[in-house]
Image (cartoon, rainbow, N blue to C red):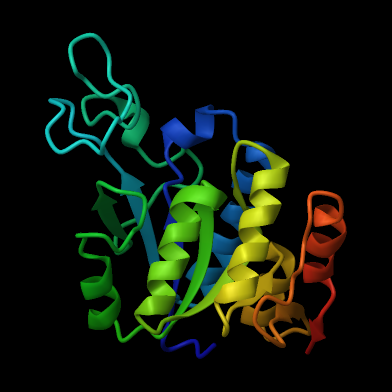
Length: 224
C-alpha cells in the first residue's frame, strides 16, 4: 500500500446494521474508530457507503421485505436507520456513497470517486461480511483495485458466516491482504506488522468441521 493512493472504505456502518444482530458489533465499532483515527492522522481518504431503500418503495430489490403499505422495513430513507453509527460519523471532507444494492459499486458513484482520487488500494471493513462486504470486495477486484480486508472490523449475523465469507475472499481475490485492525494500524504507522496473503487459489480449504481452525490461520501468515 502506498499512502498516496489508498483509501479507507467503510461499508454500511449505519444505525440499521448497528442495531441488528451483528455478532460482536460493539467491538467492531471500537476497532473501526481506531482505524479511522489512524487514517485521519495519515491523511488517508475515508469513504462510507450507505445502503438505502427509498421510503416510497420505488426501486427496491426483488422480494425486499416491506410492510403492508409496500414501504421498506430496512434502510428506509424516511428514518434515521440510514445514518452512520454515532461514534463513526463522517467529517467534512469524507465521502458518502449511497447504494441501492449489496455492492458498493453497483450503479453508484464509488468507482468515479476512487478514480478521481487516484486510488489503487482499498482498506475495507464494514457489514455484513457475507453480503455487502463480500460483493463489494469482489467488485473491487473485478475493477483491479487491490483490497486490504480488515477482518475484525467486519461482521455479520453469525460468526460462522463471517469466517466463511472472509475465507472465500481469501481464496479467490488473489492479491488480497487480510489484516486484524491493530496490525493494519501498525502498517500505516510504519511499525512491524503481520498480514495474511494468498500463496495459491483456493488455499483455505475449509469444511464445516475445520472452519475455525482454517480461519485462525489468517492471523499468522506474513510478518513484516
